[in-house]
Image (cartoon, rainbow, N blue to C red; front, side):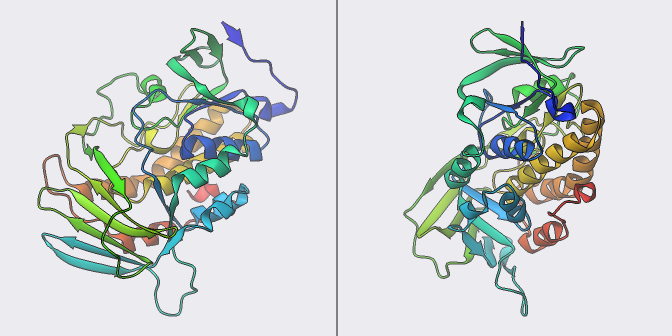
Length: 344
């Protein structure tokens, strides 16, 4: 087994492997680099639902991205000021920007690839292993041991799972497969196309829910009108939000809190996860202490949103209820992005 060579700069000397080259993984790596760490990023091997080409980010996660030097990637996005939902139970229209508020919208939608490219540019090529995937993660006395697809085994101080709902890292975090399982998440995402009917307003998102639970979402994005169709399907067992970390392992993004693809929270939560993890790693004397703090903060932060998401998506087989975007705005507006992750 091979061990990576350590540096000489104290607590930032911890050897960190981030598994996942989507937004959650690249952002975690960028946030760690900002705090003085030198993480390696490798591709995940789990089922990747991080391919929705549209990112939905609630304020103040844009400020967090700006602090990592990639805020310009959001400039081409489309601010959202209104959310209209047509559902068999009735029509709702929620205004997200209220009278007298500044023009900056509380929500922006942007192409995922644009943000991924900006985040990837913050990681040196030598530390970004796109063609190397993990086969297995095992706990060890001196840190987790990772077996890569080429058979090489390496030990790290910390392995961060940012590899989505099918996370290999989560398999090591959760010993008992039945522990914490919560089968509530419909998974199939059918597709995105740039062939929708013309939209009534550029800063409005329109959702059409069918009686069977499928959702068609129409929105304007970077000069194009897009539609996205999400079909109802079988539910997957997913780990509950109490399982975030343990023994040199941490989960971020949908590896930690997989939710229905029709929800608009997981992108912003992934940004919060990565920046919070980097902050506690830099401020705590040991990896163990950092992970305990991280798990406590993020579990507390997401518990309300996770429970609300279960109510909005309904139980397995039920017709989902539309998400309340105006309510979600209040959940994100109260965050302090500038440096008080203790409040998260």
